[in-house]
Length: 409
Image 1 (cartoon, rainbow, N blue to C red):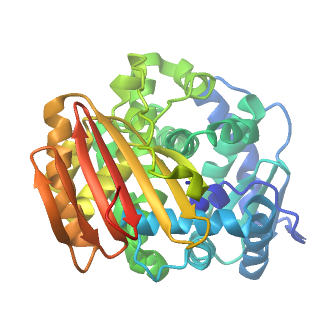
Image 2: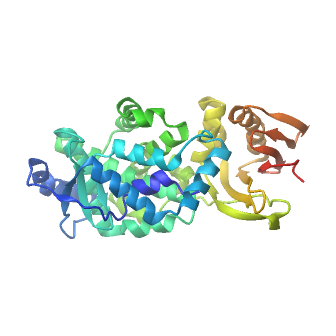
Image 3: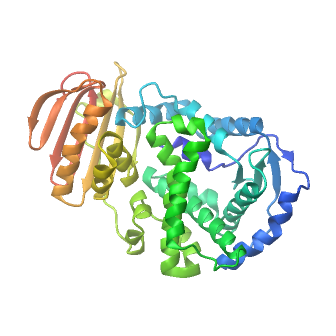
């Protein structure tokens, strides 16, 4: 499941007609900002960063073109269908349209790491807000000059959860450097007190909902996916900085975290904790199906899923025990109905059972009707809105198959 909204948000390769920026006051700050960021990180800018201004209409065309270049319609359909079957978005959700509207609504500036150019949206922000956005994007430019961001993101696309983690590295570091730069400019040390980190996390999560109506009306998973790289990525970068100092700015790119769980729990990253990704359960009669998509699911995905249908007090603590997850989306060759298989591995039989028990409530929440046909301590079978299902516990692994048109064989 490629994260369409995150992938486009990376702003790779524009190709839209851009109006060169006039010599406005904002861009006179670039030299001082570059010097400040280099002093904080120990990394020098190796070349100038070209800049330009862009209108909202040009941005929309940019995003539409990028979508056409990077994702086929079948890929978008598969991602949307996966999200719907998981219960992370409603049945009538239009992923492509919603993603374009979200990104067009929220963008104030961005760094295009194919063109190696920085863009600021005309009228998106004014005064200090505009300068803060410029600091953030110059931090991306600095990282790109040393760690080749296009390659960094492309390598992460081999795993969905890996891609989520790498997005958090990019945005978390840029957000941290932006804040540290402002602290240094105000006369303090170029770092961020822990209390400010927590305050900023809450600010990122709340301000987006207050300022952006498209964001406010988006499903929880979409909102959390857009906030996660900035809020949790910020806390991750801070934790690594406190451990490694200036070496942290290179370390997170040279040895990137492999999962959203390592972003949420930086100690796992620092301790080089490994991952164990289970294979999704094999669908009976697999020769009758074609594969639409497959990929990994991480702690972030399970945390949002559980919080959406149980509660934050239950969901987040349960998701912390995830070791790894995967999924496979199939489509019947003749009847064209989709079947979703999911496997999740947990750190103990007890935590696996806890998820197994919570998942019944997830099914009750995501479907209008849940019919239980058979239930044992380790297996649950029945029918929901998307078809027949089977969920079973196997040691530390929970397996799920959903969408069958007849009882699962």
